[in-house]
Length: 81
Image 1 (cartoon, one colour):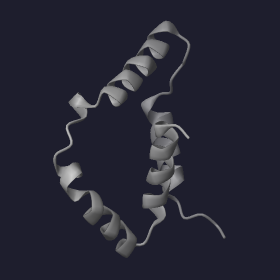
Image 2 (spheres, helix red, strand yellow; image 1 turned 30 degrees about the vertical axis):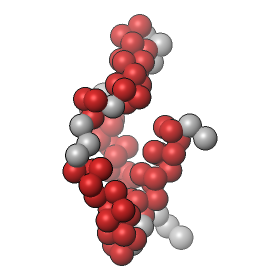
Image 3 (cartoon, rainbow, N blue to C red; image 1 turned 30 degrees about the horizontal axis):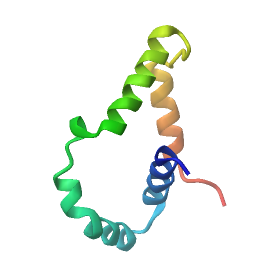
Image 4 (cartoon, helix red, strand yellow; image 1 turned 60 degrees about the vertical axis):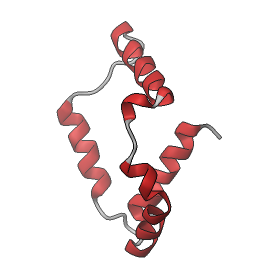
């Protein structure tokens, strides 16, 4: 499993996790989170460079801010069970 996929899965999990679990996870990584400098994260910078190049070359079209905002807001709505 790629690091990007792991990040996505963690993000999705944390968004839905109850408060107790989020606090427990944060306690485990608190020191690293508070000392994290994204400008020194070579994997992140490489991914940002790749995505930027894909956009500039036309390989990826991208979406407008309005469309992105609509998608974000739609994802925040409670899911029907």
